[in-house]
Length: 251
Image (tube, rainbow, N blue to C red; front, side):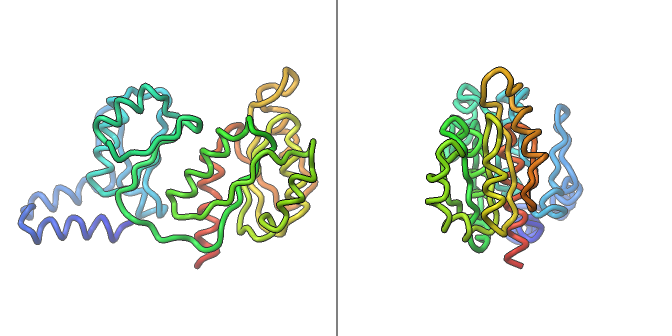
């Protein structure tokens, strides 16, 4: 990421598109760009290896667009989470190459190719109702350079469906297990594999599931070693962590 940013500034100067003063100004804005309503962290790609991710909920379409323009100026790949269809329609007018998954509420804009990480990450759900959260994880993984194997609707109520996919599970470098109700899927998966399992509780379930708290507590108390847990419905967080683990595995 840092190479791409600096090469962009250098190439612009070499082509005569920028003066020395303009190049220096671009370097001054490298740490962050102050938009008044937001301070866009242009430096994050250098520190963390991945550009800032935009959390769309609570932001106006105009605010999201202005942040995206700032990031696009740096040739950053862009992820916007929690975007509704109305906001996407506004954003699409400015960024027609952006891709949107309404079910996951996730939008991506790919401005440069990324190095593909080795192997694959398996994203597994207990039920079909968990797919929106799972897709948030899967799409995040894909734009960050990972191959994803999706295994959906294999919850413990019909555990033979999960066991039928054991070969895919065992071959994964990392597994993201997404489930609501009692959240038992993560423990079962964790007992079958030797790779890290990132558990994602969802808010799917009846009254006593308390909006995902029951699944969260079950996953936190998993008796399977190697299971870690993110917050309720946080598919993006799970996908991002899985991408980092997979990247490190590739050296």
